[in-house]
Length: 117
Image (tube, rainbow, N blue to C red; front, side):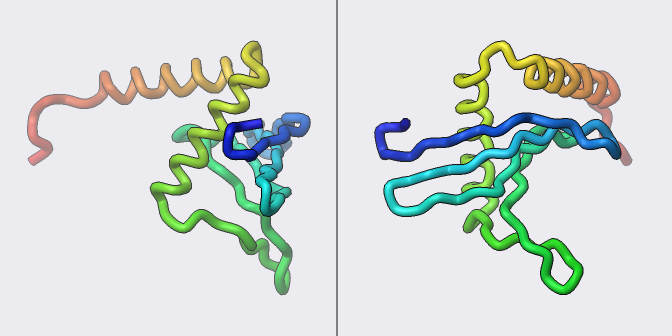
């Protein structure tokens, strides 16, 4: 548990059947509330958070969301950090980081210093 009384609980990681995306369900508990149904998801461009959602009139809609992009980024970084602390030898995290670093290297090599016009 963190100094501020916030704790995070991770559940079994899984890969989706459709595109083999890694999904790590988790919940966050503070001294005042508990949010369940959150997901840390391995995307093409890195990790992102899937927020708790509900099926409303046949459509999935988030029912909780960060107040800003900055808040979402901070929360995402915190969750990834906590997952790495709890599971330092996670094969899924290592594979994701390797894939992302090789993608970044490819992109870096493809950029030129010349102006595009």
